[in-house]
Amino acid sequence: MNRYLSTLSFGPIALVSLLAGCAVGPDYQRPALDLPQSYAQTAAAQHYALQKDIQNNWWTLFQSPALNTLIEQAWAANPGIEAAQASLRAAQENVYAQQGYFYPTVQAGYTPSRTKLAGNQGGNSPGVQGNGSVISTTQNTPASEGGTAPFNAPVIYNFHTAQLTVGYTPDVFGANRRQLESAQAQQRVQRFQLEAAYITLASNVVAAAFQDALLRRQIALVQETITANQNALTLAQRQLGAGYISRLDFTAQQGALAQSRQLLPPLQKQFEQNRDLLRVLAGIRADGAVPGFDLSTFQLPQDLPLTLPSHLVEQRPDVRAAEELLRSASAEVGIARAARLPQFSISGSAGGTASQFGQMFWNSGKFFELTASVTQSLFDGGTLKHREAAANESLRGAVATYRSTVAGAFQNVADVLHAIDTDAEALRSAADASAVARAALELTERQHAKGYQDRLALIAAEQNVRQAGITLAQAQASQLGDTAALFQALGGGWWNRNER
Image (cartoon, rainbow, N blue to C red):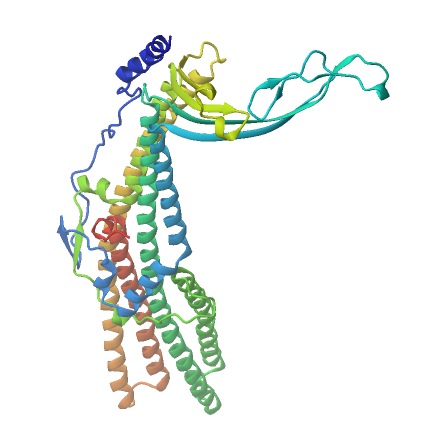
């Protein structure tokens, strides 16, 4: 009999083993992409090195030790990085958890019980003696209860059951493999999002450092302009008293001073807010100190990497994350499809039961059970069908999202390249204007020394030099910022970074 039961039970197991190995649903394939052959850019002051790899610490090319230190501090203390790291670890644990479904589950159980049976249910109540035998407890009714009719006294006995249960769900149609595929894709999404968080944080710190240097230069030049206008107003007041200028000229000088003073508060506001941003990015307390930066200390990299368009989809973390989401959506189709197919399971248990703990595994108390089952949903109101349809639509949406992300990546690179080219032209124009202003100042100084120009003309020439300096500083900061943006747009070199 036992041999027949074993054959009957293991027949489905053998069949399941033969079926296992196929995974329903689509196997992932990257969608066809219409990639450009080159980027549109013009000649700039900087040189583009095609196919040059991007170093992982690209910001060191600006040769600012203070900036390097601040970025390292930001990577170590920024809460956003910590959150992204935790999300990656959680996704990895989900992968481990899904891998566990490939193995059988083994559970051990022990159930002790103490039972009292009522004696007034009619018939004899089973009792258990110390040796485990069942006894009858039929007795006569005591005289105090009136009569001598027999009755069943309550019975109290102990019972012990211990068993080992093994369960296994064969992955016949690959549902578990698809679920693992989806979990692994989600884990890689978190990995690429972590890399994107590192790159974005470094880029934000670099941009804030450039902004700090620009605002410092602008504030200094505006303060010099205010001082010069104050001096000019003092001189104009003396000239007005002496009758050399009119009240209208004096009022115009007052207006110039007022206008220059109006420029300072907005710059100071931007400066302090930018300092607050640097503190937040670097994980520094609100009252903590952050380094100051000077435009003159930054070196502009002359050789810029320019990745081939065909490689950009491999380097951008956002593109890679979008592709992994697409891979996950593809696996979800297989999961939904497998849910509509027969579901197999195998379980077995063995153990012992007795009234005394030490007797549970005597031959008389042992038991076992081995079960194989298969179920197929015949009617569910269309739930499983529509879930598969929803998974297919999600896959189509993921394909569109991936293509949109790729298109956005190429647009980002193209925009940055155009900005760098425009920055080069703007910087040349600003440098020329600054040179002209300085030449005019030198000429005015010589004429003033010989008495051909008054003090007000000299002050005006000095103001023109400072205004040209502000424009030049803005052009320099823009060129630095757009250069940093190119490294970010090309992927930031995360693939050259050591594993953390």
